[in-house]
Length: 163
Image: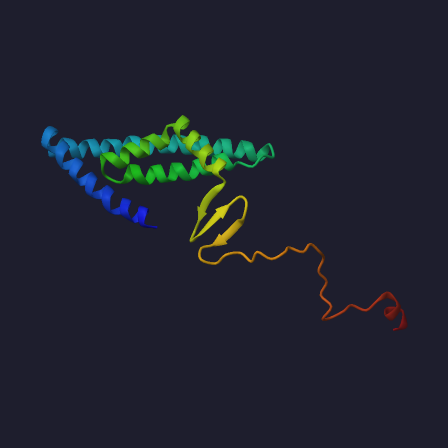
């Protein structure tokens, strides 16, 4: 919890410092133009990579496979888009890196092989299923069986014949 908060504070400060340093060397307007150019290029790459991933996602579904790799990559592409629209060179570098297919595929495979992802305020692990944070599963025995509601029993065949 503290690491994302720390990144949320440190990265904008680093971005501002870097933007100021770059603007000292190439000028403020040139720096602003460069930031705008990276956003435009990023959005175009984002569109292409997103459509490519969506196409692979649909192909996997049609062939009866689970498109897990494509789902993780899709989330990474969305994250890359957010980074590219954020003004700054550090976020743009991370965003462009995530849009590079071999890098993105490798990171996605690593996420999938770890068997862990994050869902909302809980965690998902492939071994334990979904678990809300601070609320552990009951470690009791699982009983396999069938269920039948007998609070309103249906009449048996013999009872229907009497009517």
